[in-house]
Length: 164
Image (tube, rainbow, N blue to C red; front, side, top):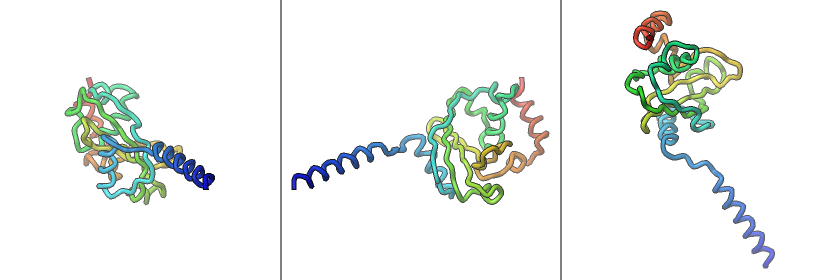
């Protein structure tokens, strides 16, 4: 009987330790997760916070380092000006049931941008190794589809607004 009690105690301790190792999602990450599921996507994995930065005009134009920021902000409904001087936090989720899945035959990565605890927007990219190119909007639209402009028209307008 004592042997049974010891085994039960050991199993109980192991389960207690394992349950403490589980990831408890709270705060901004929970906000981002709820936003993704509200869009109708099925989350298959989460990488949590993958990047954060303070947005300023210099990040939006003028160097090769500004290209990722241009791409991300170019497919947003929100204007970046509103967020100058504020911290942007990005959470990554791999999802299924996304429009890019039909094009690339793969799941998609969604990057949700938050500022001061609220979703600003986000962008998507196929979960395919070695694939290069621009990001898509959260719902899989290209920059041209989002803005209604050709890339060159958009770039000229962007340069005028965010260039020196």
